[in-house]
Image 1 (spheres, rainbow, N blue to C red):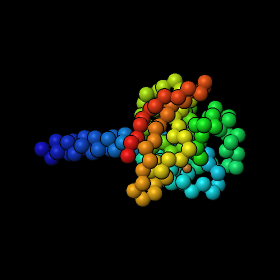
Image 2: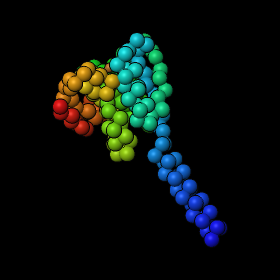
Image 3: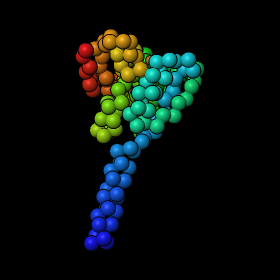
Image 4: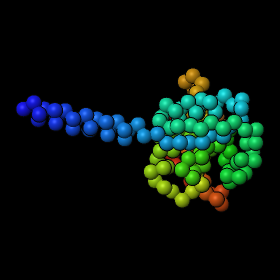
Length: 150
Ligand SMILES: [Cu+2]
């Protein structure tokens, strides 16, 4: 009896450990930003709150970097991030990054062009501008990945 109880206890413990281990799986994301970008820090915090491990790289060469990763001017924002071979440009919500990683689309990555108010890292009280998360490919084609209205 005592023995059975310990067995049950141990398997329960293992279940808890494996479930916890799965849900807390963190993924590395490299974020490039200029040293004094405040809203970039806000977005980094949002990623960390959503179980991403952020490698924060400060550089004064953002425009060169955007060229290198194939981000056209009209799709550009402040920071540029790289995760799992994808480019994440601007204030893209963490849920959309996770969705992209599970979908494995044949695109360069996602962007929220410019810096809409109300996106993660761009909070200004209750103000929320509608915005779109766009996919973009190497030819500069875009599609709407997710639309956020107020
Ligand atoms: Cu920004």
